[in-house]
Image 1 (spheres, rainbow, N blue to C red):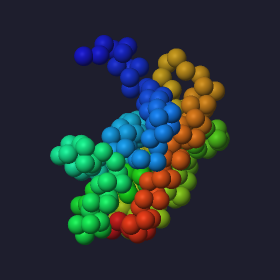
Image 2: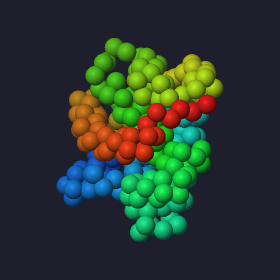
Image 3: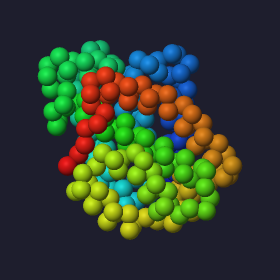
Image 4: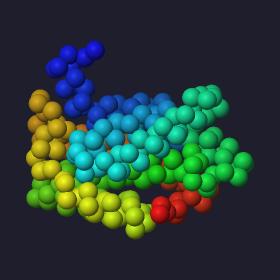
Length: 217
């Protein structure tokens, strides 16, 4: 079990761990293969970032967890056959289940959109020091998840937005004790640079099977 100091360090380094994961994928030329395990790991890491916002993101966080669990379950059934997102989606397409509500393909779609949202949120923190966290979240939502949410999901988001913490509190939780603002912004920029090509490949996979425009209720 991690001691107090270790636990705090672990909880404040999600961005750096994601950067290391993506750098390894890039160096090994694995980006375009879309490894399932790496996608699950990145989704889990950025879920931890959203959890730091608090109850505001509880609805979104719950949805992300369910999608992670669905994808993880199918991966663990046969890791060798489900080692890449492409293999999973192709298999469901052949079975005619790719567009079903409980398909792994839909889980991948919504996880990729949630990752888009998380990155847009972090970029908002990096680029504009004047905006409140509420404003940054709202802009990130409008450009990523918002276009694909139905009225129920949109209404839940608008209610949750009222519980957003102060920007300084959130940034402090992400930075941890031993990191300055310039270094933190540099890490966000590095993360966005690394993750965007990976997410582009996921979105292209969704387009290939005509899933990219699916909406929630």
